[in-house]
Image (cartoon, rainbow, N blue to C red; front, side, top):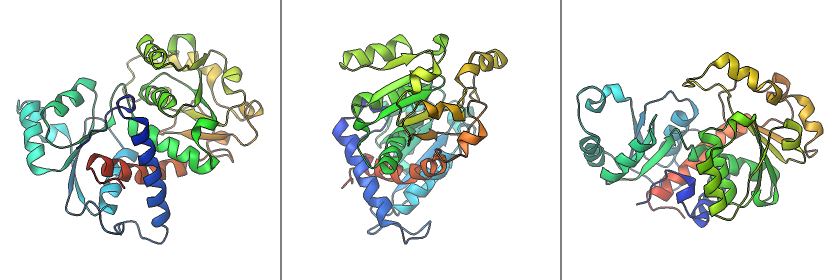
Length: 309
């Protein structure tokens, strides 16, 4: 049994195995319908329980399809439907209950410590579907997408992130260490990665490049990543934050500074941080990126269930 909580804690060789498996599984599904199971139904009769404390579109749907295509089933819960949310039941008791009924647990939460608490008491694998400091399933899928489009290891590419320092960027930074790729970050000074993140990178003898100039960050990039600058639960002055990010809005002109065949990726949902002609333009692969969540999450599930090829 293995958990999938933070890319920092997972060996590089295991992350690479997940991507290799996902590539094979995607290729093998070309002639299959959406809910047809993979050959051999490797997770036949297994139950994944999902719980969402925050709204979700791609993570919810992609995990549903992932477990179904592996031959298993899923049950999706909201905290206010459980005694954990309203009846005073402890995390320990809820974890023991989930371990009795299910074979795996995927949690999207507002608290990092809640994932660690569940991990302590669960007897089944837990997968982080998003927490304040990490979005590991998203970023591993993004690496899969980059390599699929570029047809080369991400270690040979220059990756650029334009936007806020959030949980997706934290996981992308962790990925830059695990997969050894150059990562440039473009953001206002106030919104640069925190000291803990930078210290972890230094401790692992790696380096990230932070620029407070959009053009410098994007120079010679093979890939530009972005995310919504104003997130749903952002407790800041949103009008002021938008103004602070005005110089970091992703416009078509930015591709004058990148590599000729640079691609644009966005984990969605989108906001004002990217112009429509970029989001829907020839450089954008956001829908391919979203679809690939299914394939990579299948391999993450197999990794957690000890059935990865």
